[in-house]
Amino acid sequence: MGLFDFIQQQKNGPSHQKTIPSLIEDLGQDKPKNVRQEAHDILIARGQESILPLSEALDSEDWRVREEAAKILGQIGDERAVKALIQLFKDDKTRVQLWATDSLIAMGKRAVPPLIEALSDEDRRVRMGAVVALGEIQDLEAKEYLRKLLDDTDAEVRAAATEAIDVIDETVSA
Figure (spheres, rainbow, N blue to C red):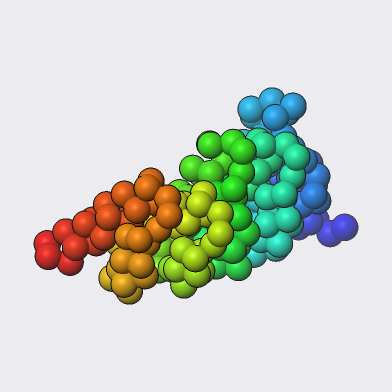
């Protein structure tokens, strides 16, 4: 180890030396908040190399790991995570669903094609999450697909689709 490497190690501390799987483990609900926050920050800093392991962590049994992984993926903003985030609309924990939605909204237009595809999912939760995200992204292209949900079998999905279309119309006319 050279002098530069030694200085970097001292500056960054031992947590910067942790592997991505151990950092993901540090996101768990059994860890103190400061440990979770530090792992969160390091995983964001590692960016692209974190995408695949974080996407896999969305299947964790620990809801806190799923929630934090969704947050981090949204902050990194890589579209490779979009389909995995969409699957979180089926999560039993509402807060995990909400963070998945927020992360997809943060990705903006890059998330639109997979969200449009999700509008035809059999699971109403997936359709509902996709409608909400598309309404917030306010992409004009999504409007025609949202119209198809005005005849959805689920009343809540129909209502959400109506609201999303209204929001998009307001944005276009503004």
